[in-house]
Image (cartoon, rainbow, N blue to C red):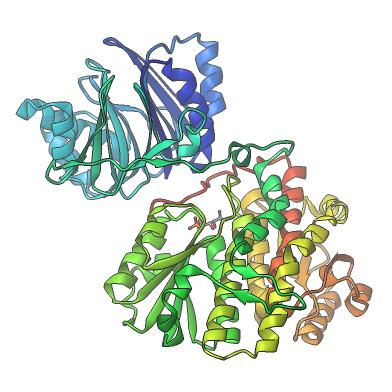
Length: 620
Ligand code: M6R
């Protein structure tokens, strides 16, 4: 994971690269670098830290970043600590070739040994420096053009990459290539924009080519694009698409952080997820749910023997909610797996088994490998993704987009509620096909679903209560989140949100399980957040609250507006609107997102760019 960017055309490259890198920082932000080329001259500057640091230093040292060709990189360290030696672009031993790379070269160590034996010296600890020197070695040894040397070298590589490379003696050419990691090319008359994500060039062009795995392109100044297969140099026809990005969606507007904007966008994003899929029930017409990817594979869903849901992080938490919904409404046995574990197992799957892969980005490395394994084992693979045309979206047998819009804050918020919304729709449709729910219940849940955006809006009004609670607890060292049934995954998600952006240790647990260990942690200093809305296990939750109170823990309870009993027991209550048990997570997660945000904000953390993290994890 990292962000790569490049420009070749007639404008000054530096501002385009700098602004583009700022938009790619969600992919990594521990170090960055830019190289700009003019005739046979170049300027390269790299530094530890965020892109702002790079900008400040370039302007402080008055470095002249002049030229119409350039490449840049923002890094999330895999090989070697974040510092300016390991930062990209990496330069070959002869100081001729400049390379940026997103991905991992798995066999870099063996190649490094061979290159070292041939006199190459390495300054950094990165796999990328090995690749740029391999290209140089192949080029010099065989007297090849840059593109041919790149192609032959890449055929020796095991791993994943999206790269851009420039030879400083001929900066009128950039060679780019892709395998595994994403790479988009923006195309205008007489100019090319290279990026890991087209959000970084959408202000310049809406014409985009998404390179596919195993493809490379040779970009020449004032010439047409030359697209090739890396394996055999076969020439390909580029398929150029029009970008559908609304600029407003990728700006913070009046919000201090993207995360806060994205939390507040949820009434809209859930409405967008439902749009065209939930035919709103009214007095005269029954409600109806329709999702193309399910409709056209109706028999597969009706006859499914099992469903396995595979995902990572927040998407894995949404999967646990999916398990509850699918088993409850569609009565199909469901297993939920971490993609990173599933990919190394020997799952027992066949034609009648469905694997659902869930990923906001559609490019999480472990989830991609899980998808490939599921396909190899003959399962039908259904994808739930947010990023349109992402790898996962393109490689599943069928799927449904979440339509949450771009999510830029590293902590997932609106993509979580959109994933749950899709899973609810899916469970209801399959339940209806399989006649495992009555029409009355189906109609009732359709109506309830319709009311969700409005109820999320109401829930968002509790911001002041959350601020007060956050003031009281922002300096504690530990938090516990407890829930039961469908609210247990919400507890996990609440704990993840808090720890990833505020660095407070937090754990989510099934409320009843706490007495098997975690209860030992309880004392008067530990706040315990209870998901205690009125579900089937309400009475049991009251018992669990009593147990914590008896040990002097501080209770923060998420309760329904009409709640009396828990409100009398808890130290703090956060009131949310009432909704059917199945739809609870869509409401109960909102206060937990706000709580995590407020606490991190009060602690002065950079909410959108928490340490050590990046938005999409494209490495294993
Ligand atoms: O893009 P994905 O949904 O595949 O990402 C999976 C996780 O990396 C992600 O959900 C991560 O846990 C969140 N950013 C946490 O907020």
